[in-house]
Structures are given as structure tokens and as C-alpha cells.
Image 1: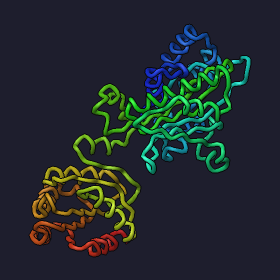
Image 2 (image 1 turned 90 degrees about the vertical axis):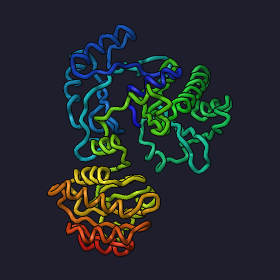
Image 3 (image 1 turned 60 degrees about the vertical axis):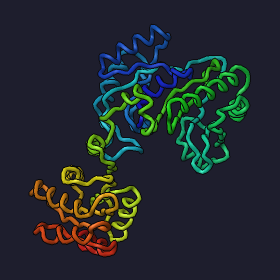
Image 4 (image 1 turned 60 degrees about the horizontal axis):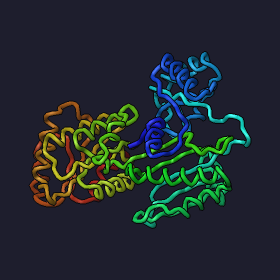
Length: 397
């Protein structure tokens, strides 16, 4: 589950991480009020207006702007709220902006120049350890830094059973070239950031940039936080931060009815039981010349109601030209699935306007094939993988 920047910062702050302070606003009036309050609390005269969407590269799309007075705060907030923000991480249509973060200006003059760093905490799956990735090249796309100057990216692996040790936090600060107050601030920052990552059951914390201010404070100016969905039962308060407006509506609907669904860009819908078989089915569709339109795992039960719900969700995608149902009847009997497909087809009537290819293998597969073939419906049955592939190819060309 992704968090907005302002939510991620609030989470970081609760673990003692210094953040760029800000107030979220739903409209221009609230934006002006937020700017006034920040001025009273921090003394800042300039404010940064940031679109709150689940996508990176907001500045490149015009979603992050500096306001030098309250009139500019109002004008810029009006421009950003309601716009479809297109970034390198969104579709061509972009994402609609529903709210903005009014943040304090932290690039103020002082004894030294502000410096920006990159830092993230994530799991290194190859070693089974948590990893802090960091660089002196903050404010840039980390992919560009990795490609053009890989020697400027550092990593520090942490044994999750032990946690971060003091020498590791000091090593991060040293590699970033810090000294004095900034060095001490960075060690505290790193330790608190790692604690926040572990305690919140996150899968990613990315801060870009981490800022060293002109008076040697270390703070998070941005935040990208992804929480592990499988651990949200331990964090009811964090689960409530989910913004469904930022998620695919079809995926949200599928989740509400207990279906594992991921929307893709292809033309062949998939209905499968079991994640492994679903992946193999998508490979099959690719080999047959089609493109999978979704990943959909209906799980161990596939009665008429569940099959009908799955069909309706798949058919919400206008690009679907055919549906491939691939069920292995181990726990669930194939004839029961076949009857569910027939009943669902009859219930939906004209709502099903694309060919359906059904491959049922396992317990009572022969009975299932007979049920499908004798139903009189526009449903093609298959027994072998290759047979199903041939029928998909005939449909999608």
C-alpha cells in the first residue's frame, strides 16, 4: 500500500525523523490558510506547493512549484488541484490531483550551502537482509545516477535479527562526506529512518532528497513509503491511510470481493486458480500471439457467483477480445467449476460479448468438458495447454 508524501512524512516524524513541515489542503482557500499557519509557526515566507499523487517525477509534470507570497499560493494551488498530472510514472492520461501539500521553504541562507542526498531502505532479496541505499546525488532520478555514475551509489546491509548498529549509521554519514553537527544529525536520521521502516512493516522507504540545510540540520524533504499489505492487520491505523482514489478502481473492486486481480495492458482476459498457474497461463497467451489483459486468481473456490463476479470484472476492460479460463481441479472439482461457468454465462446473458475458452484439468475433467460442450453456449473447451493456446491464437490472430 502506497502512502502520500504528507502521510509518509507524518509516519517518519512519529519515529523521530526530522521532516520538512507542511499542511495538506483540499482547495485554494485551505492552501492559503495552511501557508499562513506555517508562517506563524516557522517564520517561512516562501512555500512549496506539492501535488499529492502516488507517482514520482511530480516536479517534471508541473506538480511541484514555489510560491513567494500568499497570492501565488492561491494561484498555484488553483492550478494544481484538479489537474491531471502526467509524470514519467503515470499513464498518458495522468492522475487527477485531489489535494496539495503546502510545505515550508527549507532552502534558506546560512553559514553553508544546502546539500541534497538520496536515501532509501528496502529488502535485498538476494541476501535476505535489509539494505540502506544512499548517494550524494540527491534530487536526481536514482536510475540515472546508477547508469551514469554508479560509483556514487553506496549500500549498507543490515541483519534484520540484530538491527542497525551505530558504526553502520556513522559509515553512512562518513560516505556522504559529512562532519561535525551534520555528521551527528545524519547518524540520528539514519537510525530513526531504519527504525521507522522496521516498525511500520514497510517494503520501501525512499527519501529524495534528504537535505542538509545551511545550518547543518538533516531532514526529509520528500517521502515515498510503501507498506506491506500482508502486515497491515498489525497496523489498523496505517491501513486507514489508504487512498482508494489513487488505485485502479477495477483492482479495488476485485479486492473487495476477495479476488486477486492485477490490471494489465493486453487483450486476453485470464481467470485461473493459483498464482503459479496464472503466471504460466500468461506465458501461454504470449506464446499464442496475444497479450494478457490481467492477472486474476479466483482461489480454491470457483462457484457460479464467484465465476460470474470474475467475468464481470474482466469485462470492465474494453480491450479484452477473449477470455481464457484455466482451472486445475485439485481441491475444487472441474465439473463444479464447469457448472459455475455455465450458470454464470446464462445469468450474464448479452453482457458476455467475447469468446470464452475453458481449459479444465484434474478431478472430473471429462465430465466438465461434457458439461461445457453440451451447454449450447459460445464456450470452447480444451484439455491440453497447447489446445487452449491454439484456440486463443485463432481468436486474437
